[in-house]
Image (cartoon, rainbow, N blue to C red; front, side, top):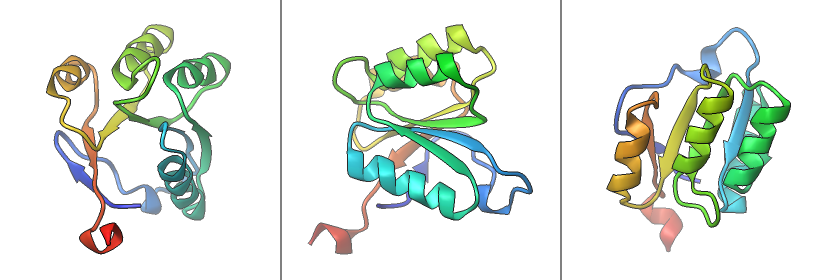
Amino acid sequence: MGGAAFHHGHIKDLATMTRSLRILVVDDDEDNAHSLGELFELEGHTAHVVHSGEEAVEAFRCEAFDVAFMDVMMPGKNGVDSFMEIRRLRPEARVYMMTGYSVEQLLRQAIVNCHCILKKVMPNWLRK
């Protein structure tokens, strides 16, 4: 699992927060999703991991999350469409969009209502 490059805004250092957060991780890449969820749990937060936009919307229907990290490009309902539906359900939702691709049109739609955009990156040594 790589780090994150910040495109717009910033995220508080989750590791230094004084309370445990309920975090939703949404990524169709199961390895990435579970790795990110495990990192949050190692820092004392509760991570709920799903693998589709449809599951993300359903998760927000059923429970409140302090923050969500959502992949942009997913089969079926993409991250931006899911984000917009989540915002209709819960206008206060804090959702950080992540992508490993250049999908500027989708990102422009999300930036209007999003806290920041994260780009998934993988260190060169992991690609070998």
